[in-house]
Image (tube, rainbow, N blue to C red; front, side, top):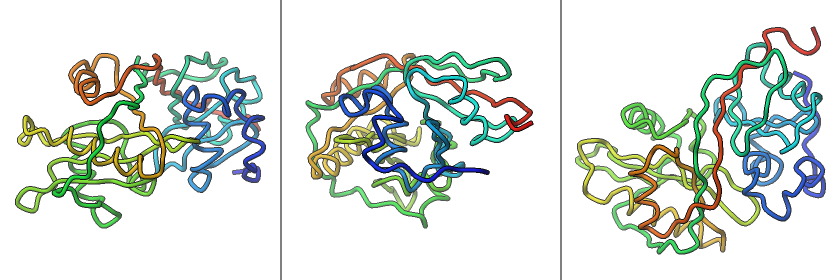
Amino acid sequence: MDLVALPSPDRLSDLQPGARSDPLENPVLAALTGRHREFADLRGRAARYQPDVTPFAGLPLDPTAADWADLAALSGPGGAAVLAGPRREAPAGWETGMDLPGVQMTGDALEVAPDPEAVRLGPADVPEMLDLVARTKPGPFLPRTVQLGTYLGIRRDGVLVAMAGERMRVPGGTEISAVCTDPAARGQGLAARLVRAVGAVIRERSERPFLHAAATNTTAIGLYERLGFTVSREVEFIGYRAPAVSPAG
């Protein structure tokens, strides 16, 4: 795969117009061209997380045909990529799969607090984390997602029953993600405790917590609102499949 060199920080505005003023408008590209460059594959103005990290990809808010061609080259023939943010209409040859309306929420009023029962999760815990994700379906979580930031969990009788962690990291902010609780342990406030605990880690860096939720998941949105999050914008999570034939033919 022909990848360009990673851009320097002063090129971020070239890759993502408006990124310096509001990185949350296009958080995937802001993360991949900034604090998460070590996890990025980049070509031109297109970017994507490495395939075993997360399926998210980034394009400018106003992508050109060349930007889509670069994303196709990064994805490979028939490869999948998930875009988040405002809707972007793909050119002919691309297929659309998942099309999920969502919301972005910012936690300026989140009351953070470390949790004495929460433990730090790492690579050795990935099998347990993947098993919990398979049971609860909080969203994409892959073998190397844990490397994106701090992940905290709560165990009962040695079994991981709840977790939450950090995913996209943009200038001045970090996303809280993978918030999930085993069905048998729900109703105990574990998710709320872990969101506050991960929020405490983020605030220690003087950063702003934010998160995303499916617009239809009113239960989760209600919980986040009670914790101090507010809806900042509507977003679309759209899964695309690149043309079966690469741009190079």
